[in-house]
Amino acid sequence: MRRLGISIYPEKSDKQTILNYIDQAAKAGFQRIFSCLLSVNKSKEEIIADFKEINEYAKGLGFEIIVDVSPRVFNQLGISYNDLTFFKEIGADGLRLDMGFTGSEESIMTYNPQGLIIEINMSNDVHTIDTIMDFQPNRYKLYGCHNFYPHDYSGLGLDFFISCSKRFKQYGLQTAAFITSQNENTFGSWPVTQGLPTLEMHRHLPMDIQVKHFIALDCVDDFIISNCYPTQEELDKVSTLDLSLVTFDIDLVDHVGEVEQKILFEELHFNRGDQNENMIRSTQSRVKYKGHHFELFNAPELIRRGDVIIESSEYGHYAGELQIALHDMKNSGMSNVVGHVKEEELFLLDYIKPWQKFRIRKA
Image 1 (cartoon, rainbow, N blue to C red):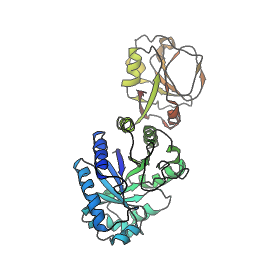
Image 2 (image 1 turned 60 degrees about the horizontal axis):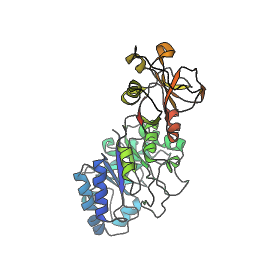
Image 3 (image 1 turned 180 degrees about the horizontal axis):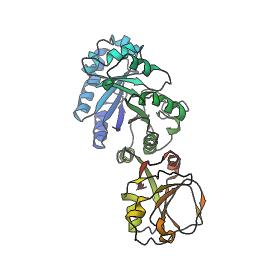
């Protein structure tokens, strides 16, 4: 199951603002909360007082709350991996180990009597998760979650991210990565505020496109907004995405007919199995609308990468087929260009595999 999440930092923001944000996110369908103890320098009693009310409020709205910790925090607060009662006291559902132990300890922790989730840092391409699995953990209480990176150019590269993620994906564990709001004056757990993505290539992308990219990669399950606070527009764009497949936003040309718009926006599309390097082909619409006359109305001489095409009846039995151009091509003179994939989303076209499902929506 894929889920959306938010991050909260009780030591950096007043309680009412956080509660309002939790309300806002709950209405948008978000289900996870990342909270952080790494930068908190308070006593155990003060932390319980600060975190408990907020966490219990969020749990009442159906959120799952995982708190980021490290061995240093364990030592600082006098917590043992054999006794995780503290995390239950603050109303958390689990804890994320930013730095772990030897593998045996993590395995034992997954059997904690409080039923807490143990989440492992995914952003290292080493055998940590393999070692933990060797010690026979309760995998139903074991998650993975990537890091986020506040400093410009410090985020993960794409190939490294995929390699790290595959280590966890092979075990069928619930996994997560971070997306970053582009709202100005956001903040996270550390003083640097140059965005908080997992992937460096996401640092300046619109937030919904970051989600679309993660969906296309199919490496992680949950997408958590790392910084506070995103705009309502950002939340709306992300919350209206179908998390089960890639959605392309397109700019529609003028004078597109009613049937063509039904094909574009109401059909579930999938790329043909016999994939070619020139275009993505969604062919079921030509079967469904066989016999309909598709008028030729917009056939530019050059079809450009990202152009969305619905074939006219001039093309015989191809009439009504939807295509998305993967590179620039000469138009036969019989192909209608009905729209164009948003420029910042063009790179997503390269991730559509044979038989992969996708949807199209109006930008």
